[in-house]
Image 1: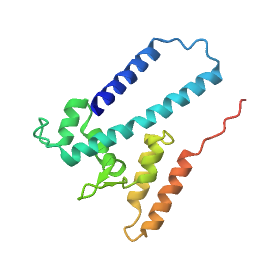
Image 2: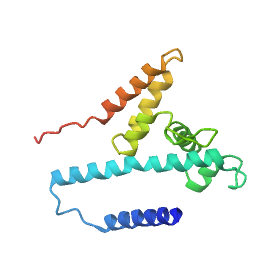
Image 3: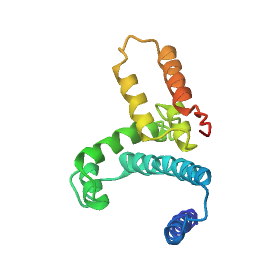
Image 4: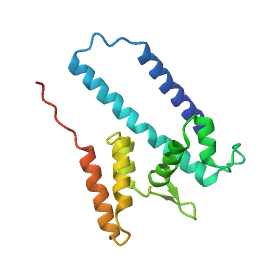
Amino acid sequence: MSSDRVTAAVAAYQAAAAELLERSFEEFTHLELVELLSELETTAWQLPTIGHEVIARLQREASAVELGAKSLKSVMVQRLRISGKEAKRRLAEAKELGPRTALNGEPLDPLLAPTATAQSKGAIGPEHVTEIRSFLDKLPARVDPEVRELSEKTLVAAASATAIVSPE
């Protein structure tokens, strides 16, 4: 069953995190530590993608009442122990970056597909997503959809660019 595989993957992720917490990093060189931080950041940047998918499905299908609250936002505040502001942000991001479904059940790309793809690869982080969404929100409605999409792609490319750090 698919849910068993997901549950097992989450357990493996939690076990890997617990193992890392038990490790010493004293044997690493400074450059290796920076590389380790980079790899950890990439992994952390990918995680919201999973949340977007879960939240998008809950937004589509779930009744907040059946989940024990008056709204999905309330459910998230209670169950995830996050602020209302954070729950609102996650709901909005899931709406734009999560998967969508047409009325006939056909899967649709996220509204901000280039941003969602970059985030799923760990190429951009939360601050990048916030800036991209903010920029696109400020574009006037009269801006051509092709220009809007090109703007998003340009911002994603700029945010994804790897900075070269030379040893000093």
